[in-house]
Image (cartoon, rainbow over all chains, first blue to last red; front, side, top):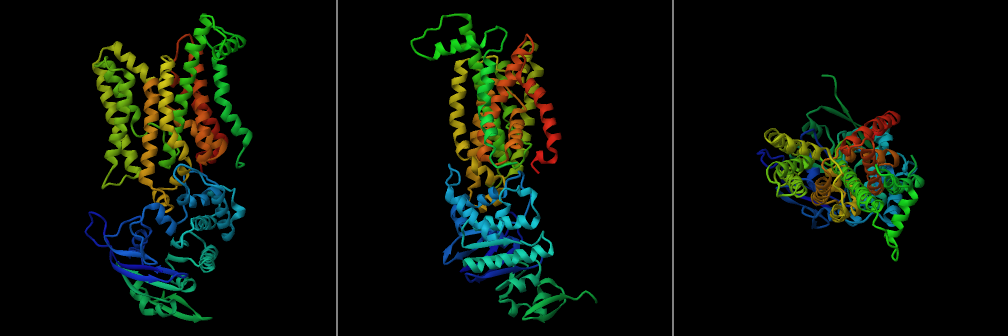
Length: 258
Length: 336
């Protein structure tokens, strides 16, 4: 269980508070989606949980233990971050990229062991990218790269996964594919995932729990069917929507005609 | 590109020995390979005594230390090139990016111009280290050091020391000016066994951490935030890499002046041939750098009746070879 307790954050030197006391909790084995417009503090909160930025006050507890001030190696064994796909400066093979996920398990003056390779291959098979192992990471599609980064996070063997807009650079098919895969793996391995997304439809379809963030505050949180409503989305994005029930899930349709 | 091209890797690893062997019987004084082998054999194996001939002096006291020194400096420049390209995530960075060369040049200029009682080698070493330390301190903002400010402060420090060198060059007597200019071009003409010993020990100490931490360069080249999220202590590891590299380059510069191009080119060539994985890139660049430098120095000694500065040769043979590889490899060569 991940507990976010009263997190405050402002950039050093800047007087504007970006996170104004955010609290929520996530049950283990769930996919939780953070929804919020640009500038809502989503990414900032994400960076604080990942330990890349230090929050001014508040606590982040994983199963009761504060992970806010762990050294990098221990934090990496607790939570794995899946960044947005990007171009690295050198054309590493896919296998070498996934292997990097083992960094916290490889001691400072050594190189990955057979065991690290085994875990790496396991993660790649689970994601279904083992056939890409020898391809240069720079020569595969954006969707494949995002999968590689998910595999890398799995190789890290951390119980908590943080995914930063995993769909943002992907086409329609790959968006669905990656979200489905993330959900399957979280359920299969009993992990906990916190995902930021832009599309409330995706959130409704793939999450167990949604946290709505606006102007540095959590507006609401709860299961998708309780929390997604015309009012909440209007409050969150300032957009008028219709919500259509279909096969037990809800489809959010923005009103584009005035 | 196959994952491990074993014959190619072995060829690269053996290349410095081949280059060194060829270089040993190349020179103004003609000594045949058989005689060379005989002299080496008698020198190494006990119970045999080398006659105190000019051939022995040339092979053992002149050519051998010079070849070894060139090889060692080649190792230092290529490994630090690989390291800096990795931690700065930029294939166009060279070992001098943080201002070592300008600092060392300033140390040399002071020693030659005003303080002849202080050896050039020590002054170059001290000011090379000082320049990098300054760049590192300038880049520190709010206790954090990130990539871009570090490169920028390296440029600032380089510009500053280069200007100081220019002032000294402008003010001093033209005879001394000539010496400074010659030293800055880089040369192994002063090589002796003492230099080899100093550089050997210096490199052994400074390159061991880089060698054993080389896999971390893969992770660090993905960027600070990603490396941190994967459990790398970026601040500490980067400091180890920069400090080790700076010592290695300062040692190299102090005995041979500033030899450009090697630290940029060799890692590139090796990466094009064998791939970007630093586990193989670091040792193969060591070998490639040594072979390239020995070859360049052999050409520098033999091309004309003068001992040309080797820095000129590295650029002259490096540039066309590099252009050829880029044209052949197209965009792939830049690591894309």
